[in-house]
Image (cartoon, rainbow over all chains, first blue to last red; front, side, top):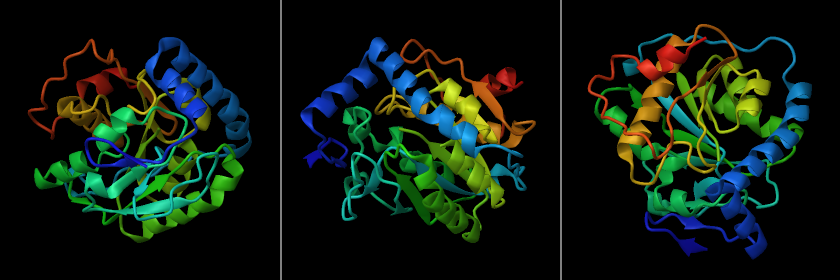
Length: 181
Length: 103
């Protein structure tokens, strides 16, 4: 693992993976390729898994009264937790509200983590959310937040996703903000 | 991301998700998506650009309130680095970028 300037650390991927991740993140052609790969991987699975009605829960309170949770799929987790498996991992990690950037790590190999390690808010905006709580823009930051890693199989994700959904709902949270890699 | 949003919303919690791939956001049939044509790993913007990050959060909070129906995908107009992100003076006012892009 390697330190970024915010103090978050990266789980090293293979050098070829790092090169591809940088190309996908930092060049127009790489980004187009990354979007194409995402579509190829996701669209057939989404067609299978998203039939029927779309769930719909209107916000019941003013934003300034809402408890807000973050869910990130950018591979963020506590550095004391087991890292996500870089080639695919359907499990999730819990991240406490008061976490410091230097307590966090990123385990993901499909994007260049250099900038997110400098500023964890790019993939997990917990510092911005705590500021909004202090400014009374939102009611409260939830006690627990959730991180997922890279997983190609949507079917394998469904169990952990439902676990997280249940935990969020049982914690009396009003609004979930979801941030991708 | 879309599957997460759908399952969380189904338990009675409002969701707003960011997307960096528009076709995936559209296919996900999730409640509320904000799409940004920005690099992977930068959904909130650039490192250290607090005004940009707060702009995206303001847009998310606006969409939480203002989305008219399920499967709302709003495309944000920001041109990555060729954009200035003025500070938000009044958070009780909705984001004009979101309101003007609503379907």
